[in-house]
Length: 327
Ligand code: C5P
Image (cartoon, rainbow, N blue to C red; front, side, top):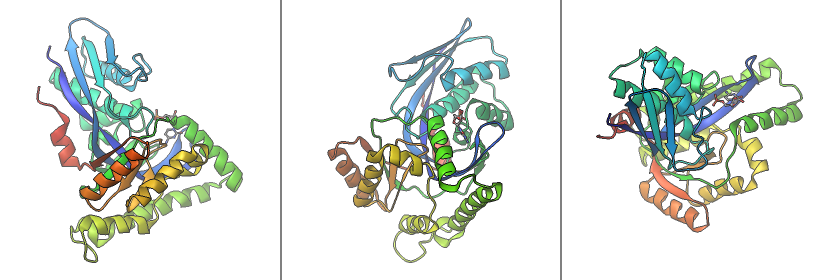
């Protein structure tokens, strides 16, 4: 059968607030996910026979059950009642362990690709449930655009889409393992606060929620009109800075990898209005007023020796339109 080919887009986190460890070992969190135009390409083929085969020329991508795509394919074969062989080919362009949701996006693409190849669709709530079983960051890709993430990140709510924001993604060679970053966060909070009381922890989460709410309720974000003259994106970015939304992972990842803190400073110096680590890193991003600013900044970061690309945030409608490649 002919493969179904899809773009598997990346995400960034506009702020990420880590709460207490839950009984299941995961951390309660709040974050705003934003899909962006950078992507991998995934090809899904359903054929005769049985078994799952993963192909990827990047040696850092596992080709066994530990790959999120493999786990997704197993669950989808069962959910769609298919008795087929599945071949998943990943053209890796996004960094591995980069905090851009590359592996999670690949898993979401596998879900959508298998549905298309089989000519069957799950109910939206069943899709989201399967995505959540595969990984905390998978469901967001089934929504796309600007998305509120709560619970362990898997409980997703579409937010009103922000306008397309020019940006730079810098991808240092180092990889940061998310479970390690969470463990470091636990060590850091224990040292900083002693034991965080349940009340203190939930206050932090509430504060993050009200900051997001403030951001979304100010004029420039949703009305389409710039708040104080200047461009709409410019006003939105100033509002974002003003809310003080941050990524908690920076507190533990920057001391361990000081070069990432330096890179955030470099993005600021190159003119970004808002810069941050994405997820647990190691990718950093900077948001800019104009495409020209982003292009110039990317060139500066590259010339200082770190791979970087100018891109743009991707809204929900655009993501849906661009996911399937004509085959
Ligand atoms: O859900 P996912 O498989 O992406 O999570 C990977 C690991 O990250 C988990 O096993 C857990 O150690 C950690 N994690 C966490 N709290 C979250 C999400 C992930 O502790 N909210």
